[in-house]
Image 1 (cartoon, rainbow, N blue to C red):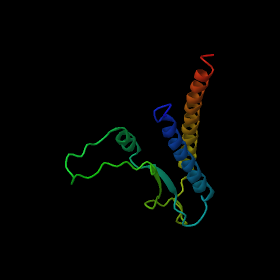
Image 2: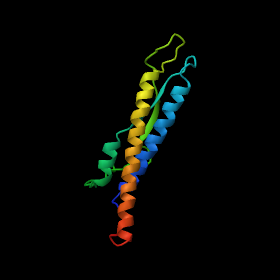
Image 3: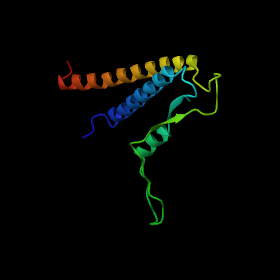
Length: 131
């Protein structure tokens, strides 16, 4: 039985993304002075499209039609930024950009936690009989 129609699962995936993004940003900041280090970034890979396609059902009207599948496990990936060089030592970590992304990611993470807490509080209210 799905209590929240997939909301908890979506919030979990989003928290996983925010956690990996935070680790990646921390790694970039830690390597700001490492020669030839290339900054990494975590990007969504059509997450919205995957979520929308997960709720839609495709009907195959011919056996040769391609089956409609949704890859639930992979929603983001880590890429390396190779197209820029900011420092004379080959490093491309922009500390100001990384700090701004870190702050933005922390706000995003906290909003997800607040939303998850709201879902659990709703469940707790129902279990207590509305009290």
